[in-house]
Length: 570
Image 1 (cartoon, rainbow, N blue to C red):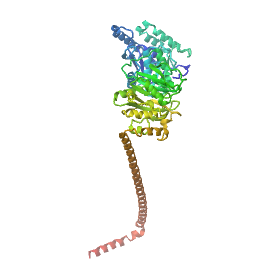
Image 2 (cartoon, rainbow, N blue to C red; image 1 turned 135 degrees about the vertical axis):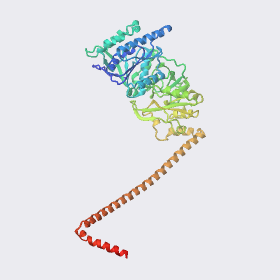
Image 3 (cartoon, helix red, strand yellow; image 1 turned 180 degrees about the vertical axis):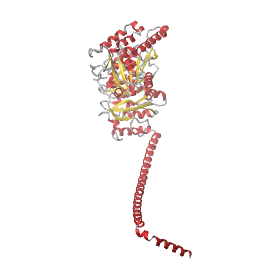
Image 4 (cartoon, rainbow, N blue to C red; image 1 turned 30 degrees about the vertical axis):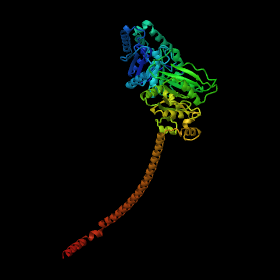
């Protein structure tokens, strides 16, 4: 995250209509953001505090229950001073808070249930593993929400690089009193004094009238959604140094194969792997560039990483590099990732769950969003559900959208080293012969569009790349698949013919309707003319009836009527 310069005027309030605070242990909500909580309470804004772990690390088994209760009571006493109510205790075991899909889903449920639009969480740069992991989990949850929510990362053990300072000068006395409630912790070390010193230190860039401040990184969900890696930068290296590990022995190993040309974008690809919520991954980085590829470490975040060089001294073309990676991979599930693309944090978890839930499928694939060189959406999305007939016609799955089983390799699926284009399409055709692909209709990876990525932008099914695929596969496609392809073509042709006939009939009907409307207009015109003539006749008749002669001759007309009546009787 690119932090702005610390403002020389601290704010009095971080805006929010409903506030949710996640604390790793009982006391962290007060130490980290006690001043911000009091500000929200002053304005009548609902505040919910969730304490994730029991904070009982190092306590003997027989004393855990009593110690946990003591820490909870201390937190409740501090909550009374801050004025927000009673915190919620999830009671994860201390030091067992894991960056996982399970915890992310629990965080998402809490955000939705509370309706929070401002979520506080510990900084991802904290030293304590529970602090750090909880921050990462909340950041990923906010990224998935994508809008109308902001996260405010607070500091406790490691000062962060803030983009927002909150003036709590008038709240220091109450915050100090709240921190003093945590007798169990202050007996070990005077954490309350450390936090007081940290809050005082935060006034370094502020006017002398500000005597205490809290520091935050405030990030809108939209910013996380657009570029979650920017917050972490080289976080995978830092996690290795801190020794963050997860127990993943019960999960299938996933091998992510990168055919690296040592482009600058490689760091984005590796960072996106380091942020995966799936716990059991190995990175197989194949040197496709040659002798001058940069050195690569042994870890990608918490995941082991191997740097593979082929027997050839010269650079490897794409298909050869792919086969070198397939041969070196140990995973039960495998995925290719080009060194200019990247994954969302849940990509592997989502695809692995789909494969586990559909054992008869040979692979799983998901939607891919296309981005430009500035990581801005182009509007193009690969979102076609799997269809064997469509796959015979064209490749609609970017290579990193597909997670496939190792058994595909054991069945003989390899990249054709005679192909220097569409090798992934050829590979998917091989895999599809072993079983269908399950489709997950959600975007969870990103495809960078640039000059060398034109394969997936072709709009016509022609050229040497297509010709080689058709020439190779025209005698290998099973008859039933060709029959389905012909059926799909015939259905499309028939549908087009029916549509054309319908359009013709529609045109004829529209012509008839136009003629009828013309006739109706003519009839209406004639009717208007007749009504005009009738009005003229009526006007003339009215003149006659009102004339003197009409009145003078009235007796004669009556005598005439009498005579006619008598004649009719004879």
